[in-house]
Image 1 (tube, one colour):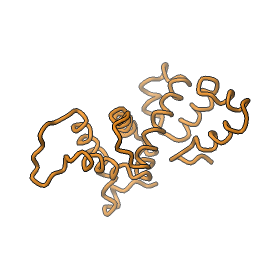
Image 2: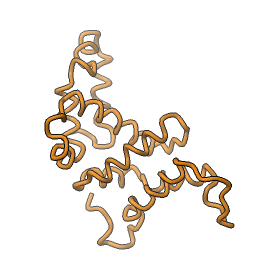
Image 3: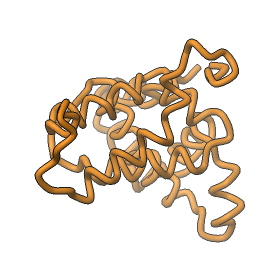
Image 4: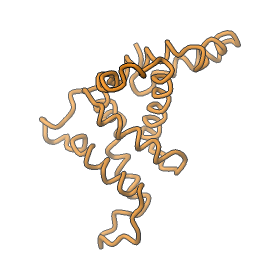
Length: 163
């Protein structure tokens, strides 16, 4: 059984076991495996409807690694600027393509708190409401706050994901 928060953990251990496993489980050599992991962990309905002919194993493998980095960042509350904007766009895509699994996964890694933490770490949520300048990252965080608002309202049972 794969852990949705970190489905690659067992594979990393296996890859380290021997040089043969390392070579066999490289991204480019095992795209069929990684695309199956993607399909088992993340929502694929919207992606496959929209990109039916271009949703190849290699595309899904690339998307798996992007989403894993985003989930890991949220789980660790990593607010560093390295790939932050890219990871937030990945989260937007996950929310827009949600059929239930993506939202539950983001709920379990406390993604709403992570997004709020980004705003706090940047000093955007000041009591006086005055912000010196607006950046694309700031607008992206505001948009994500709107998208993940249902994940914050655990006191309202109808808005809490059934995870």
